[in-house]
Image (cartoon, rainbow, N blue to C red):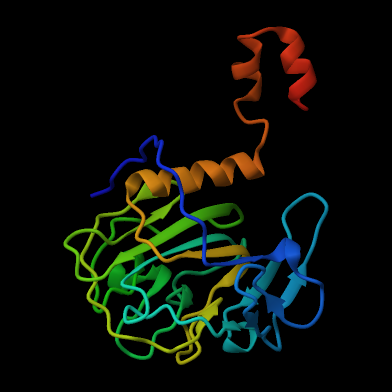
Length: 250
């Protein structure tokens, strides 16, 4: 069952960890501007910065391209946690050859993470200490997507995933602790779990989002990436001059 996206007026908390490829120097490690934590770039990770799109890191399915961040997302550290990810799968990404754990710290217990193409979860899912079916399918190739994976440890039906504000069936997370560092692009302990695609940003919040907060996060993302979306309709109600001044597309 899919739960349709909802409008929201909730106020988002500040992230405790945030990586944005736009902040990357172009060489060396990727440093979180909030916590100061340094994430190690993989030997085969490719950084790309283009004028007509966001900067991003490219992954190739294999563990040699993973980015490793020494930030513990285990439930013993934070019983509530939300992962926010902006990503794009390559045009030739094949969900049949990988389980697609785009972020995680799994060490054998279906630990916390976000999953894109694992048939044990029906496609999209999250590590909850076991398997379940979210009802969401692997997202389309070649397009940027916004994803939320939120956790409320042992709280009934309060853990869920969303892609582009379409949220899956809620479940109950009962996780053990995983590795003390998480990886981006796949899992450090397991082959055939990586993605072939790009990640432009990751944010971590030490709070479990509800549906309204997940919708707010998506709306904030769309406003950042498409600042003129809806601009003409809103401002032209005031007058055409406002459209001309404030909307670059007008």
